Image (cartoon, rainbow, N blue to C red; front, side, top):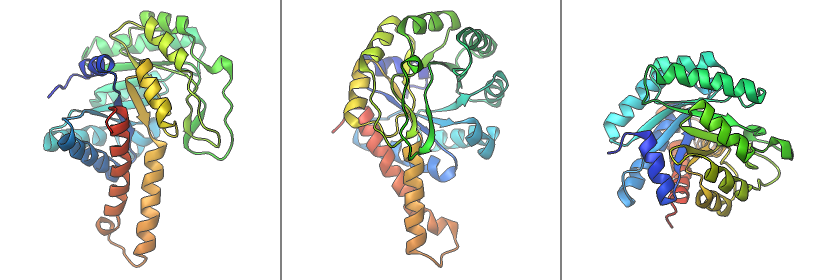
Length: 292
């Protein structure tokens, strides 16, 4: 079992598949994702996964609780599971996740001016790598609009939002990141309009980045399957899903409560919810690994 995230991402890049990154807010979502990965293993192979928790999600669950939950599931199911501190918006929250024992830290300072983003990202990477070089660190450049929910409005992406290939190369070189997240026409959440990825931009950035730096697609929810496949072929090898997980969870919960209006026992209410999320994750795993 390969437990090195950097090596797994390099294999994914070489073999043209993408490592799934799935966000959680609670135990039920986590269990559903692990069960999906385990059932997929029976059909294909032992498939690695990343579990992400944003600042809000990890504040709700608890930093140490996140770490020990992953440790318990990893030991029980014998699946390569990597815990990522998704969208850390400051040096303080990035360092706190690292100190708590996360396998990976995503530093998202993309809303800051370029020079400030580069400088602070570099400082955090030096801090983390000097203490544990095995922890994977992701930086972000470009402005990804939206939020991780179903949005009724149309989200317009402006040309200046998109990541510039030459700047991406400089950013990666000067920061020393392991993973690069960019804006390629993707949005956070699901909007009224369908996303349209700039596949040529993805390919150009992949070409300019060193081979040992993974290329990450955030906002994977709501992107049509054919665009996901094209993005993987162009060089994406790590894809984030959150809103579709939340939607599957809420739809499953609504149906379970509707079918059992008198039920008050949580462990009787949640099995259909877990199954709904599990099916969504299995669907994404098949898509990301290009299996029919």
